[in-house]
Length: 310
Ligand code: NAD
Ligand code: SER
Image 1 (cartoon, rainbow, N blue to C red):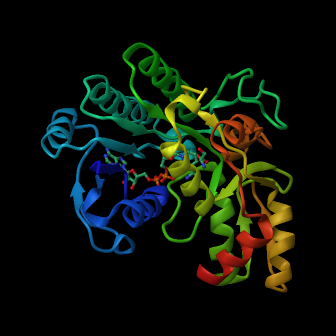
Image 2: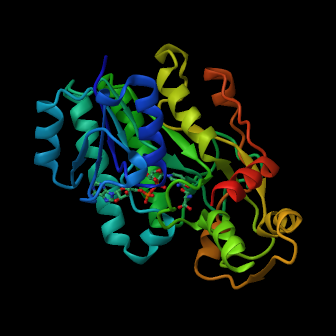
């Protein structure tokens, strides 16, 4: 049994991924770690280690001494937050990756998962059914860090025979842990505000179509990719991952069926130009062919579940 470390385990994805990994591999096999000193209640029992991924020596010591063999590296600044602190976003998103990549290169880590994003694409990319291989000119510091990270993952896999795996997640929708400062966060905030106040002030315009996915699908995709036979994986950088596409207006129209009288207002801010540079929908045929990926949750189901739990 391999010992697993989740870095950034207190975040939106980290909480749910830690729970899913513990469910599959056992509570003692999966260590949750985060810079946050307090363990989120949702994580429940199991080891929680406060760790700053930027403290390279301390992280190396911990991983080597604890004989960790698999790392899920989730610590990062997301798109909107990164635009406010570009220098720090670049430092965190890149230095964290190199610390983990180097441990893989040196043979300590047998497998690594590192998420990329639809943010690797830019306004010169074809926006509908965006293919795996296409023009990639991201205009955000977040997107630049993800694209650079992808290239480094592929470089390490090709030159050092490492096993680094990655997905270009779309916007993820969940209720167990709040989102961390992304452009797609509106699709979560809207549920909280609809239930609390019956109205939502959306920071994107009504017709901004973006690729989205329910967290359960994203966690399953992550685990399926990590368990896929290495020889089946043609993509050594990061796999496109599709999901569903909707606009704020389509989301609001569907919500009105459940919450009569719900209203939405639009006040686009700096996040609009980020969203405008991203694809509307993603072609994930490589994932479908290589490891049998299939998205399952549609918008109607997502809304039903979110309204039950938020
Ligand atoms: P999040 O902001 O919710 O969680 C990130 C976690 O990392 C937080 O708990 C934070 O405390 C922790 N962290 C920050 N700095 C740290 C440090 N120095 N050391 C250790 N931990 C630190 O983010 P998320 O939504 O869970 O995203 C996780 C990863 O997935 C990121 O790489 C993100 O770019 C990627 N991603 C997320 C989405 C999405 O929609 N949520 C979409 C595409 C890609
Ligand atoms: N959901 C993420 C963001 O909006 C995409 O990587 O930043």
